[in-house]
Length: 202
Image 1 (cartoon, rainbow, N blue to C red):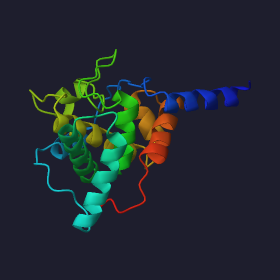
Image 2: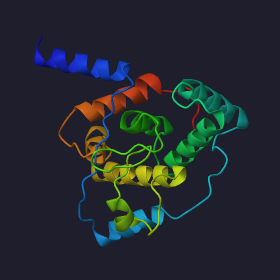
Image 3: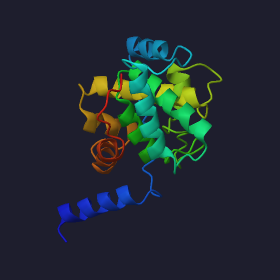
Image 4: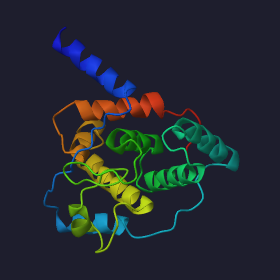
């Protein structure tokens, strides 16, 4: 089997076998003071509002469809709905597609709230603890739903800005695997294949 064929087969296996994860470790990099302040400001606490859609029907359709897809991974309905509402809110707040964030959570933690990687990354979006000291507030709990998603979305937004909107490179930075294709490919495939949504999302 040629190298390209082998990589494709591995990617398919990863996508079809939900047990495997690509939990990584964002790499500590010095931030310019202006960037650090901007990211800190983006973490400023705000309550999760109602889903932001053009109308209530669009909101119900999105929530119903995403809940259906997530049911096997998160059986508890209350927990599932809370997760989806928070993903939607925090993603849009950071200027991200909520379905992309769902793809990241799938690949990073398989929707396990208390997941911890070997490198120490935590929670749904596998955020490294050094970010709390760098841009957060003492006592921020990375296992808390909204805190974890807010950090993850702010960090990904930072990397997307750094990479001028290049998802492949930004995702590599997010995972701490810049230059390696497996993680970006897995997230982009999950985003488009399992979490893609044709209706209105905002």
